[in-house]
Length: 299
Image (cartoon, rainbow, N blue to C red; front, side, top):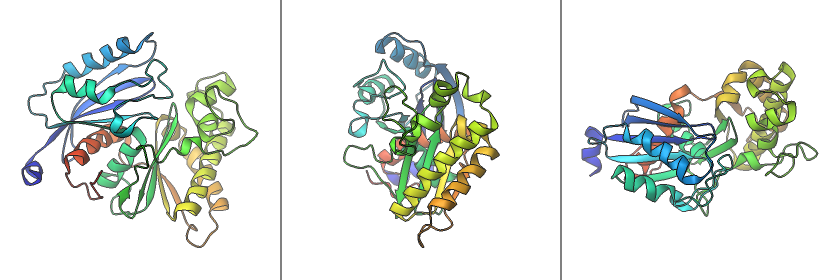
C-alpha cells in the first residue's frame, strides 16, 4: 500500500484554530492545491460550530482524497477521539475524529496542532534532517510538539509537548482558565490582549520583547531537559512580532541553556510560513497511513 501511495497521495488537511478553521487539499509532496477558511469564533454551541466546519469541507471535491489529517488545539483523548481545545469553549469532549471521518468518508487522523507543525517542519520545513527539536505555535494560544531521536513524542494520551503550560513567570498573569504565569498566560495573543487591553497586533516593542523573552526561557529549559538544540516557531504572534520577538527569545535562551549539551540552542522562525498548519495537518494524515515523512511514522 505504501508503494502505491508514494506515486501520488492527497490529503484533506484541516487546521482547527481558536479564530478560524482552515482546510486544503495537500499532496504527499507538500503542495497545497486549494485552501479555504471560515471563522471559528462566536458560535453558541458545539453543533453550530461543527456545521461551519462541515460547510467548509463540503466545498471540496473529495473524490481523489486518500486521507484526512487534522491539527487541533488540545487537550484531547488519544487519536483525537474527543477534543477540548482551550480556546474553543463550545467544544468540550467533542468527538471530532469520528464526525470528520463520517463527513469525509476517508481514514481520518487527528493530532495536536503543534505536533502537526513538528511533523511538517521535519518533513519539508526548517527542521529537515534534524533528529532533535521542538516546534512551537505562538498564536491565540501556545503549543508545542517535540521530536527526539527522529521520533515525534506522543505521550500517554497523545498530548506530549504542551510547553504553553510550563511556568515561566511564577508571579505573572492570572489568565482565566490557566495556572498563573504559564507561557500561554504570558505570551499568547489572548494573554497579551487580556493584559494590555489591546489586540496583540498592536503590542508595543516592550511587549514583543517580553513575549520573546519568556518563550526563550521556556525553550532554554526544554533544551536543558531534553538535549535538543533547535526550536522552530510559528504562529501569528511570533511571526507577526518578528525580529523583536526572536532576538529577545534567543538572548534569554542563551542565558538559560548553559549546560554543555544545550549551549548554542537556536530559536528560528518555522520554515513553512502560512502553509505550516495545513502541511502539518496533511502530515498527520500521511503519518497515520504509514507514509514515510523523513521522521519516524509510527504512532
